[in-house]
Length: 471
Picture (cartoon, rainbow, N blue to C red):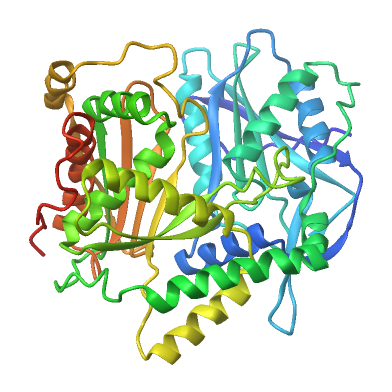
């Protein structure tokens, strides 16, 4: 049933706007504990005070109709339980997922004046969806709109709460929606991957408890031996306190092609090694302990799941006395152990960290995070010519660095992201300047480029030549 409601205009380019209520129905309903992936992300959302919206405003294929978008939206909410999942905050302090079998969600239809800019209007809609407060208890975690220009649908906007899915789950969703095509009657192939309610039940099973216990044992070994004070910068916090910056480097991209070809590896573990080495140099310390975001898609039942299953693994590496080649190789080996033990109950893990910290009489600083957000093209060396040193060095002047934001919205102490990009390595760094100075943040990302280029052509050089940033 279409229930059209006139909405307030929010741009001079908008001629009219209305809302279509899209009914949906799917298999599965109930109340369950959060899955481990949901629980870990929910903890991060609470620490940072955000509902972590994800989404886009993009052009659509020519000929796309409102009816097709309605049909696709109805299909997606029926098929994927996280899109019809809300939260319940219990009196005992627990947060649970509530999956509904049926309901209806709004699709906004925004008509742009003939002389207006539909791309700009679509971006304004995305920003409004993104910046508006989200009600975890009563609101569906999906906000959708189409933008029409001269009677034709030209753009589509979708913003979801990150609890719906991680990036790899989003790829599965887009692929399945594309394979379904525009046939409103298509039911798609049957769903076999575990959805979050099923994940939560497996996690309480004997197999799930064994997995969690193994992860806890691994983490405890690392926690008992890790050094402390790894993020102590010694400087006063800036005002505003939380800063972010971005570096893009063609030279680093080409150096990674050289490394990937020589070390017979995709670039993901190599980039982690480059980060670990650069961060050790920036801090002037031999050891690095970082929490690496692991997609967990290699686990049974999770590869094709449209859900949030990523968690952090704990990677601890001492680089003292190593060459660059040996440092990258050691990080790659340690990363495998971190990946293996990155599926666990976050509440039990939090209790473990607190207990070991008390027993050691020290704060265990686990505030350094790293995430490779590239979903595709992690092995650019396949089928391409490996560049020579002079070509990599010639690309160095193209590197750009800029500070992007300074604010008081909470962030982790240090979070480094590798962003999707073509032909360059694109790095974002977020830092809490009470723990990491801006100088050290910049030294880290610039150091990543220096480490990558040196490792490509001077593999026997020392990983830690005593370089550190001024605090």
